[in-house]
Amino acid sequence: MKAEVTRNAIDLEDFTPEAMQEVIRGATLEHFVLGNDLCRFRGRQWTTGTFSVNTGSYSFATRILGCFPQDRITIGYMRRMSSTSWMNGFDVRTDHLQFYPEGTEVNYRSARNGEWVGIEMEREFLESTVLEHLGRELGLPRRGAWNVTVPLPLLGELDRLVMASLRPEADPRAMILPITRMIADLLASQNADSLRGSMLRWKKRSAELWAAESYLRSNLADGFNSDAFAAAMGRSERSLQLLFKEAYGFSPQHWARCLALHMARKYLQRINPRLYTIQAVAEECGFNHMGRFAHHYKALFGESPSMTLAKV
Image 1 (cartoon, rainbow, N blue to C red):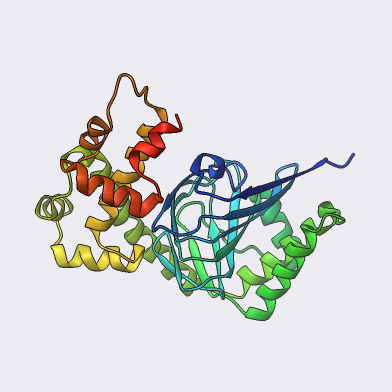
Image 2: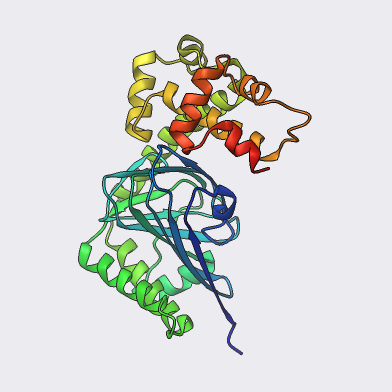
């Protein structure tokens, strides 16, 4: 008996991070808007058994933190983008394919008008398909991540299959094997040295950025201090500036403020207005000047803190 197919569509006309937590099935993802852009998201998914195809497109620049599913690997690529994106230590282009083992942490930045595809399956199914299709194993990693340049004709064929499977009249179950075989061909197009190099770059960069992220979150209420941040990271301020500029497109101070504003927005959406004030929330998130807090808040979210609170 064939497994049933479940389809899901997500269409959002404003920044609603709670509705985007599982834009990839089984993942846990936290979205951050990076500028006061028109925030539209369009996502499509289908799932049958433990295999799923997910697509998403953002009208706005975004950063996403979280974790891929614990019981499935994820294969990803970008269909289109307005400029280079960034994922887990790698610059990501439209001629790249990513391989994420089970439970890989997500640290992603997309420019405006980015569209991605994420394909999930159990490791055993991919490995058996690789062996059947290629006649050999590929030594797929269990930790780390691959980001590799692949032949565009092959990637284009994978995308054609993915898009065909998303059509309302299609039976996605018939597309599982062709999609998986095409992934096998793409992974087999790489040599072992380039894959090892990809994993080493990911490991070093990812560790540095998660340490920085942990520090900023732990010290949110204190406000950003560049000297203290550099000392905690054991690096110079300049090297941290370069690290963040390459990864996120802006400075550590800018990201610390963006993170604090998102935390403030979360609090304002959940507090009892009779028990807490906007000023208390601002101070909890490291803002000691209400005028500057209100200015930065409206510049990022397009509404004042009081407007957010009024919606509670």
